Each structure stands twice: as structure tokens, then as C-alpha cells.
Image 1 (cartoon, helix red, strand yellow):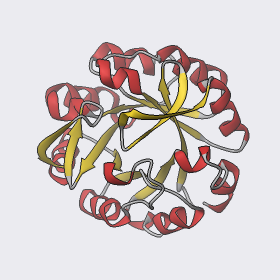
Image 2 (tube, rainbow, N blue to C red; image 1 turned 90 degrees about the vertical axis):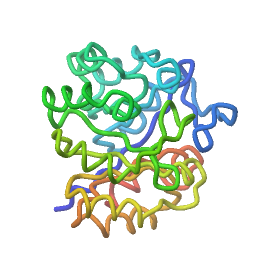
Image 3 (tube, helix red, strand yellow; image 1 turned 30 degrees about the vertical axis):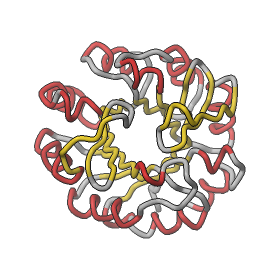
Image 4 (tube, one colour; image 1 turned 90 degrees about the horizontal axis):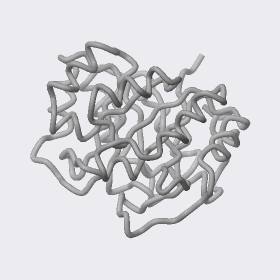
Length: 242
């Protein structure tokens, strides 16, 4: 039985569902007025998880679109993971105490490693690490800054702290429908020996099958965004395939 999971993505900005091209806030397309309605549709089509991103939160360094996240977590049967603007223990606790299943820590992993260590030790598998990479180096602050830290080095450090799940985004492919960076995803999974969820670039069902080939080394799922919004395939088709 395969556990390869499809995570349909809902990126929120100003309470709407949007997609940014390569994380650029100037290159935004609005795909819906209601994150909840979008999540309901994905859940109806068989999604077991919904991947939500608070883009305003990522920019402001605090939760902004949190009411939409909690509504999805409380009213739908699908599990929810949320990233964007989560910088304090209070933020993490707020989400996990209100029905969210997994919290994604991204920029904090670089900027505040002691906080991430504490959260991993407190909440274990309910914390995922978002590794957003540009040419192999970690990008932070909603991808506005690129650090001098290699994604693989950071992953190994965080495994020492107890990290079990990584979400790896190759910024160059995000929103481009150009195919995921399968090589980088598979390399990270092999090196880390932990669960890696691929994000960015998935454009076809074929891309999902290619990623699924690396399930045995730890590639456990894929986040799908633009391909769903531009009708390349449906959540139902992806879930049935995987």
C-alpha cells in the first residue's frame, strides 16, 4: 500500500486564494475568493491533506490569514498543514491547539535555530521543516533573502534536533509548471533518511509518478498548486493515481 500523499496547496493573500510566480509578490494570480471553498472542493475530491500558506504572514512575520486556516481545520475532515509567518511558540501552540495537524517552520530554521529545536522537541512530528532552496542554498523571509547555508547542511543539523519531515521547494521551478527538481528532492531524501515532501514545479500526473518512484528512499508526497488551478489535472485524478 502506497503512502505517497498529494497535498493540494492553498496560498492565501488578503483572504483570497492566489499563486505567486517563483514567490514574487508582484506576480500574483487570484484563483478564488474563499480559501475554505477551495479546501472543501479539494477534500471532496479525496485530498487527505490540505497544504495552506499564509503569504501575508510570511511577509509580516506573524499569522495574518489564520481564521481561514482554523475554519478548514475545524470543519473539514482533511488534515491541515500550515506555513507562513510562524515565528513564536505561541503561534505554533495556537495552530496545534485549534485542529491544525502540522506546522511548517521555514525562515525560523535559519534565523532562530534554538526556537526550532525547542518546537521539535516539544511537538515532534507535528512540526515540518520548510526548506526553500535557490541553487541549493536556503532562501528565507518569503524567498526575499537567500542565505549562505546549504539546504542539505541545514537538514542534517535539524535532524539532530529531531526533525522527521521536510518540505523541499526548489524556487526556480515554483509556479513555472516546468516539472519538479526530482534530482534535488531525491538526493535530500537519501541523505536525510527522513520524509521529504516535494514542492514546486509539478505540472502533470507524469511528474507525480516520477516523484513516486523515489518513495522507497523517503519522498513521501508532493505539494501541488498551479497545476490544479490551471486544470492540468484534478485532485481526484492525482489521488487515484498515487
